[in-house]
Every structure is written in structure tokens, then in C-alpha cells.
Length: 281
Image 1 (cartoon, helix red, strand yellow):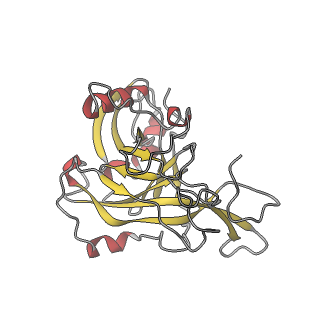
Image 2 (cartoon, one colour):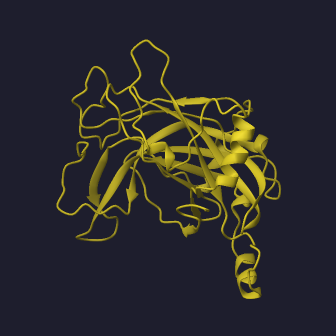
Image 3 (spheres, rainbow, N blue to C red):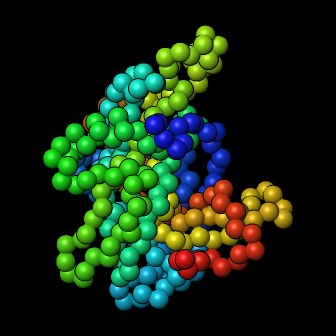
């Protein structure tokens, strides 16, 4: 099984209420830090102007808007032979989520990798072969029980106790480029793929993580009268690469801080609803 969204999509520019647009030309303005590739970075929940009320937490359990804590490592790269697809460049993001909202929360993730310089968007996949390779690299003893984007929502994220070590759940998001050649491709398909940009060529990309919060807002669609758009509260992480486009390696990928909490356009349709944040059901 190769996953839920094994395809690339044309980019639709969707801007959050505060931040969220990171054009390719801005990368040079942020010299990337030479950080340890294994460094774990922590992102705490933060407010946005479109939040309907104060973020939920132990001191405000009745808030309608909550968000989970997120910890991650810079994206890493593997070259693997994927059954039925041949050799693939696999980009993955190791992450952990923890819950300081005071109540159990279900994390139903949606990870998108947007290559700004390629004008492409890639959605994460579920791949047993890639997951096994990630576990061998990141957790060979299986102590963390790394989950994929489906199994991570089998059980709610338990609330962490105040002044105690966070109860974290570990997962991995995986991206592969469907425009790389596959066994059995016809000459026509190979020719079409050869014209398209490849994920391994990106030098400037963002990863969007939806599902960490129940915050959503309904706003007017940009340039489209009488149409409303649902925007989900989403975590945006920006990255750049050193070197050239021909060598996509772990050590060349660097996070560009800060992390941003934005409200990002969604294909979700909620007819008749006008409340900025719906309570859990």
C-alpha cells in the first residue's frame, strides 16, 4: 500500500490571517543555522487573530479552541526501493505530539509539503517499506512505537500532567514524488514525467501540519464573490537547503524559524456553519 495521497498537486496560494506566505525569493534573507541534524525542536501552541477565544489549557478547559504541542527534527532523506514503484527519494519528518490542554484530544493529521520554488504541493503517504526504514534509522529498538498518519489517530492523545514529563506520541510523515519514473511506465508517461519538476530538486519549502488544533474560521474567498472558504488552524514550518539541486541530503536541510500558527485554506465544506471554532463531537 502506498498511501492516501500519492500525488502532486498544483499550488493554490492560500494565505493565513497572520503570516503563512513564504515566497521563494525570501529564503536568502534568512541565513540557515548550522544546527545538529538530530536536534529536536519544540513548538508550543500560540494564538492567532482568527481564534474565537483563548486557547484551551488546564487553566481554561472550557475554551472552544485547543492546540497540541509539537516537537520535530529537520526533514531527513532516504533512497529506497519501494515495491511496485522502484527506487524513490523519500523525505520524512519525525515528530512528537503532546497534549497540555487538560483533556484527551484526537490528532487526525494532514501533512503537506509545499515546494515554493517548484510550484508544487505534495501530500504525505502511508508506506510500510518507508516506515520500516525510518524505524530502523530513528528507533531500532521500537521504544517509541512510531506511528504513521493513519495509526496515530487510533487513540486520543492523553493529557500530560502539570509539572510532569509530557506524555508524547511519536509519528512520521512521509513524502515521495509520483513524477519519478516507475517500472512499467510507458514511453509517453516517462516523457511526461521528465518534463515535471522533482521533489528532490526543491531548495525552499514549507511543511504544513493540520489537525493539531480544532480551530477553524470561515472567511470570504479571495477574488470570488459570494463564496466562503473554511480555513483550518495550521502549523507552518519553513526550510531551506544548502548546496545544489542534484544532491538532496539530510545535512543540507535547515529550519528557518520561527514556526507559525496560521489559518490556511481548506477544501472542507461546512454549509450553514458560522462559528469560528466548533466544539468537539
